[in-house]
Image (tube, rainbow, N blue to C red):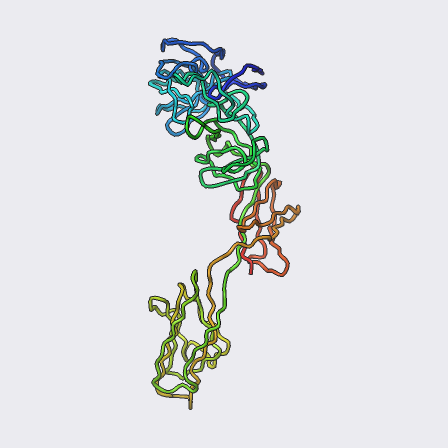
Length: 436
């Protein structure tokens, strides 16, 4: 167990707390800061980071992350970390010797542009536990003139840990396909960004809003180098753990409207009669159907329900229906309009035919969010309530099998419940319901 009380800055990974370090193999390299212009001298990661841009260095350390186009290498004592730009193969835990030239990325993070990477042995570097606000830290031996040292995050305080393997936690406040935020309450509120610490979601499936997550990853920088912000980069799905199990889903309600619209044939309807009536729904209509008050036809007569392109969706005639039809809804037609086409022939069985009479149509505008629906897990009684967008999350569920049941006064749902097995630490999405 090592304790560091030195002041460090945002690019070096020196911690002001006790650090648990378990070495599998490899030498202990002291993280003393120094300088070297000789690439033949094996120096620590910390010594490399205090060199100016363009200086050739050679370092030894432990690979803590293998990401797209780069590695992260930490000193074996876990006191400092550095991004290494390389396409050379390596695995997490490898002890490596890296030769290259120091540089600064456009985010302000220092990196070593490697010309060679050699592996020998292995070691384990454990992540350092930090509050959200401690990720990144302040400046460390930073020189704007030549790039030496490491810039801290904007407004950052405490010891710099950019490039270091860290672990933090919090409630998920924002989630999208490649990005999410976790909030432990330590960062200031306000501003355009969601509350909490930004986490890169490229290598993980971002958890749902409301879940409680523990995240391990590389402390890094994002944004312009003049005012960088903190970001945590998980290495794989194993770096994201939800506390207990989590389920999520959405509840929607069908948004339909019935519009009065009266039309029909003469009553009785004459022989050899032909007519068409077109109905167009309101803006946003996705499906439409028509309501017949009454339909009565002879054996050679027929009605066609056509879509907006003229395709026949339904036929109403003596062979498919038992007349008279009373209070009868047509089939749904995809699109925003339909046509009712009536054709009569000579009377064959009947003395006279009624024809058709319609009084309304129904337009479907797609699903709309159902807010305020309570979702309850049985057994256990764990609950969640749908937000304004109809989504919900229930977290901290002990591993086991449950029934998920939606409820809202005066409403029924389809399905009435679902059965789900919730593994510990995993997220089960797609527990969706339709309010009827």
